[in-house]
Length: 147
Image (cartoon, rainbow, N blue to C red):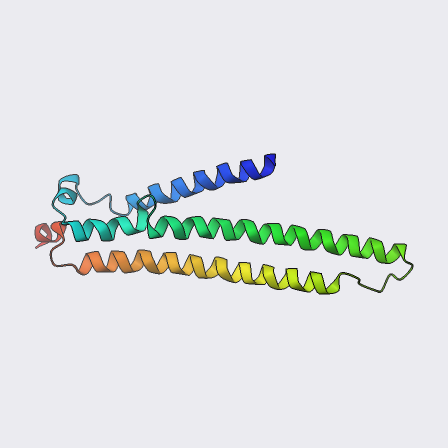
């Protein structure tokens, strides 16, 4: 119980750091330039880093899937250890009584790891799409100064 509270606190700190680091990507944009952004540009920019945004949910889901993977790994190790001990107790050390359950947990762990990778890719794609869209936007406030 205490460990899960620590993990939750750490994940909240990591999420906060990720969100703050997202703001630094646009730190070269002067503050008054962001005031001149229209509503659509601000919505697009906030999609990546704002609280309760798509980016926030992707990062949060990624951290949850990492925790799920770790928990499944622990469950699998525990099941395998108990199965091995039980087999010795029954004087049949080569038998595996929980083999089908271990297989299901192994498949679930692989699925969770695939989900981690997909969420990581989705967030990276979201970030690059937003940045590319804003860079190519002819109405982006900072672009007028560059000309």
